[in-house]
Length: 83
Image 1: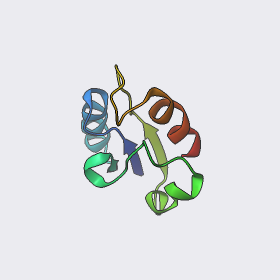
Image 2 (image 1 turned 45 degrees about the vertical axis):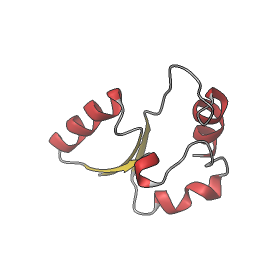
Image 3 (image 1 turned 135 degrees about the vertical axis):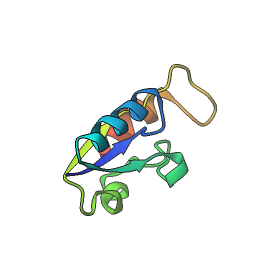
Image 4 (image 1 turned 90 degrees about the horizontal axis):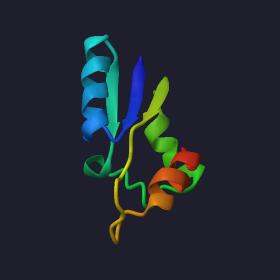
């Protein structure tokens, strides 16, 4: 199975990546390092290129505190709703 994993480099995402790969799945990471900026991906069409060939999606993006570029609403609500 091809799995799009948002937040793949975070604490939870790292462990999910290991478990998924160990189970024989292909993980496609989607994070800032790969160009997936949750602060900007707020429309369903923004996610279409990320979903090509994907069988399942796991959202493991999360922040504990806001910064100028990372806001709760954008990362925890708007981007996941669009996805």
